[in-house]
Image: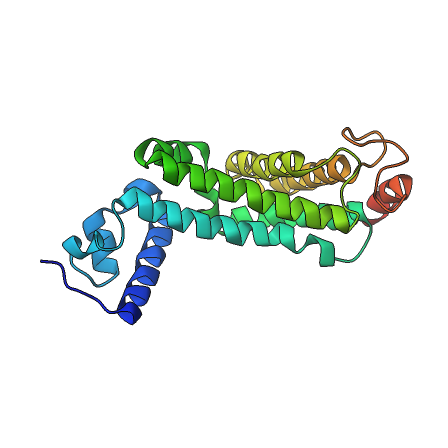
Length: 227
């Protein structure tokens, strides 16, 4: 029979289980650890695992949501950065690429992983994840808009698309030589920043009224000076 735990023990065990799941994601994804291995890493019996999670997939979903929060923190920091809207967003997207490149756990949040979790988890758990993602991106978009970082007509949908673009492109960047990877990141970060800031000629919200501090042309000039 699984051992009963008090609240302090339960909190510590849950933290160890989440850490074990993140470690497994860094080492190879959902298949990198079994329930028995995850339980052993948390210093509990395999049967006790089910006092905390109904399945391995439930644990991994919680772990992935923690990783996503860390990734979103890069975007949450953008309003406090120095410079024009374009400069702040370009720096933010470069930092997002660096985050994915430096942490294999972040890179594990790909379409295959999410598809497997979606098929394995109860629909209400998946719905809660989707709703949480949408709410988080809406909050970031609102903060960016209030800080003057987004051009007219640019909102949470475009921001979410830019964030996922970093994930998708990062997958292909791993096999590139360092110099080519760096230039690809620089070009992509610049393009995403131009699109979201509404720099003239960049797409959604383009034109002289873009909310980049009224300095769409200045942003391009600054870009040329700093690269």
